[in-house]
Length: 169
Image (tube, rainbow, N blue to C red; front, side, top):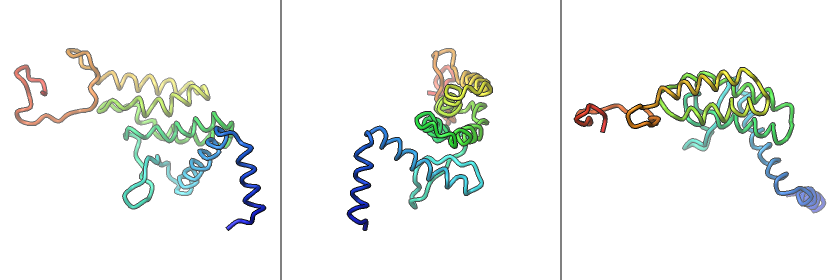
């Protein structure tokens, strides 16, 4: 329990800040906790949600959500100007660079634009443009000429699932 002086001081400090300042401060605290966990692990992990046991679920570079955490660090760097976030945003972004070669699903835009796209926009790292171009080339392999669409993900055909033209129904 806090003393009344301490509680009043906490209320006063919070009341002086705008809503957006409070939200950014909260985001910095939450993302900071995740950064601390990742850095302490010695691995480069991508947190995405809580697992059934209440712990953090981490995903690999091919997961459609893998660019969200690096993108969040880029946004936080942009909002706060906190220079300690810049090398971390770069590290978490570059850790998923292999995703630029994904051709088996269409979510490469989520992965690459959130991370490398924000890195290019915010920090002007020219090598990030190359990753984005390769990702676009990878995505183009999903274009299907006849229906003029980008196929979302690979579908494994089963017996009887083809129409008279040999296409998957």
